[in-house]
Image (tube, rainbow, N blue to C red; front, side):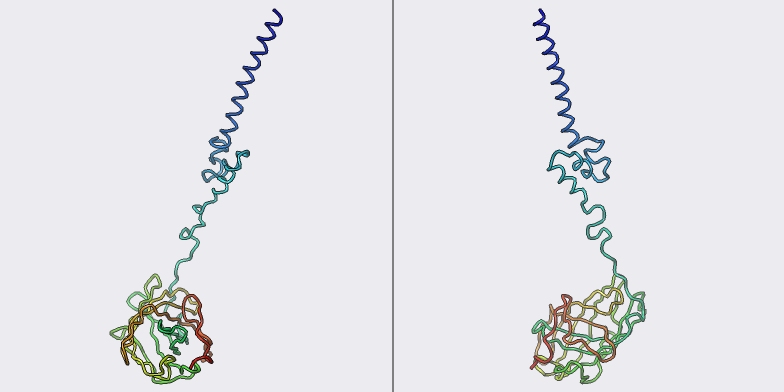
Length: 255
């Protein structure tokens, strides 16, 4: 009888322990994945941050916790990390610049100019005017030919909109042969310039399209240009020719 009672007691204890053990086991799994008190991230702010890492025992859930720092908190581009374009005010960009026009035919040999830039208020936007002087191809610093005053037809400044976008359609102008580093012959150009003009950093770049109309027609789509502020007649050598900061061939290598 005593033996029967002992066996019965032992069975009762095992059942009780199994029930407790089962409860403990299920609680451990719950904490690792779905417990609202620290499991699923209700206390962590971003779903999955605190809980999946805080469950402790499961390596894969710890990784899930790490992913809680996903860019939705402000790190992704466009969520505040990139600054908006600040368009310069009239007069802020005024000064002396060095312009490089790099035709896709041979981008390493840009046609270069000394440019006087002035700006003004123009129909609620910023207007930009240039007075250009071609520079000798063999030294990139000696002025040649007559001054060139390109304008947006009909005689308007180049407009820069509220987002900093510049689209300038230049009237036909002539580059003297002394300024042409490729063929050394005079060129007549009709080009459209595009760029973003933001801030007063003194360096602007973009692309241009259009045509050489004389002496022979030539499509210039896909060409690049840069405009860099200078002090007096101290020009960059070799100049930057595009937005990727590629450089022109050194002047001493030109023929």
